[in-house]
Length: 552
Image (cartoon, rainbow, N blue to C red):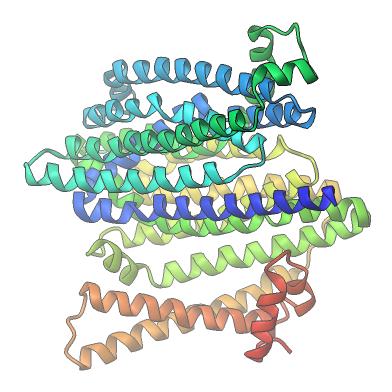
C-alpha cells in the first residue's frame, strides 16, 4: 500500500512538472513574437544575441544543483532526518547566492569585453540588464531542488509559470515604455532582457513563500530540528559544511556539464554570425537587424522541439522497464518505433513550414522578409526532434553522457559550418549549418543506439513511404493556402495582409495535418497496436482515430 501511494505521488509530481514545463516553455517561446512585433528586427536581433549568453551563465550558476539537492534531501528524508535536509537547503542556497552574485558582477563589469567578443557594441546594455537575474535565479533553483527532494513538485511548477509570466509581462511593459520615450534599439532590447531579472525575482518570492510556510508547518507538527536530531541523528554527524558542499558539487558538476551542451549551439551563433555579417560590410545596426530576421523562424522550430521534448519524457521510463522485463529485443522494437515516429514528426513540421513560410512569416511578423531563411531553418526540426528522442532513449538505456558529447560535437560542427557558409550565403548559411549540426547529433546518438540494441532499418518505412506522405502533405497544405488566397481575394480581402496570411497559414496547417494523420494510418507507418503501446496517451488517441475511421 505504501509503495502504491509513493508511486502515485511520484506520477502526480511528474504530471505537474510536465504541465508546468510545457506552459513555461510555451510562454517563453511565444513571447518572442510580440518582442519582434513591438521592438522590430533590430531589437529582436540584440535580444537573440544576448539571451544564449545569459542562458549559458545561468546554466553554469544553477544547473546541476537542483538535481543534487533533491537527491541529498530525498536520502535524508528516507531515514527521517528532516533537519539534515534543511541544512542542505540552507547551505546550497547560500553558496548559490554568493556564486550568482559573483557571476552577475562579472557579467555586468565585463559587458564591454563581451561586446568586443561579439564585435557589436549594441549588446552591452542588454548584457548588463541580464546580469541582474543572477541575484535571484540561482537561489530559486536551489529551493526548487529542496522541494523536489520532498517529492513536492507544486512549488517548482508554480514558480516556473510565475517566473515566465512576470518575465513576459515586464518585457512588454518596458518595450512599450521605452518606445514611447524614443529610446534606441540597444536600450529597448535591454528592457526586454531585464524581464528575465523580474521573472527570476518573482519566482524566488514564490519559492521563499513556500519555504516559510513549510517551516511553519514543521513547527506546528512539532518536528523541530532538535527533536529530529535526538531521535534519528545525522546521517553524517561529523560531516562539515565543506565536506557536504564537496559531495553536492561531485554530483552537480557532471549534470551541469551535460546541460551546457544544449545552449552551446545557440551561443555559437551569438559569437560567429554577427561577426561574420559585419565582415561582409554591414554596420552594427544592420547586423542586428539581419540577425533578428534570421531568428524569426526560431520560435516555430522551438515549439516543435518543445513538443518533442515533452513526448520524449514518456519514453524513458517505458524503455527502462522494457529493458528489464523484455530484454534487448523489446528495447530494440521500442527504439525503432520511437525513432520512426519522431523522424516523421520532424519531417512533417519541416515540410509544413517550408510550404507555408511566406504566409506564416507575414502572419507573425507583418512582412515576408527572411522567408527563404525561415525555410532553411525549418530543416532544423528534423535533426532536432531526432536528437531529442535519441538522447532520451540513450538515457533510458543508462547511457547518460553520450547525448551531451553528441551535442558538443554538434556545436563544433555548427561553428565550423558557420565560418564556411555565412560568408557565402549570409544568414541562410547559418540556418543550414544549424540543420546539419542537429542532424549530426542525431546520427551520433542513433549509431550508439544501434550498437546497444541492434537497430534494424527499413528503406520502405524510413524513406519511400515518408517521401510519399510528405508529398501529399505539401500538396494539401499548398492547395489550402492557394485556395484560401483565391477565395479571400474574390471576396475583396487585401492580398498580403496579416488577416489573409493568418487564414492561409491556419487552413494550410489544418489540411496538412489531416492528410498527415490519414497517410500515417493508410501507409501503415503507424499501427493501432503501436499507438496503444504509447504510455498514457496511446489508448485515448487510438480510440479517437478509430471513431473517425482513420484506423482500421
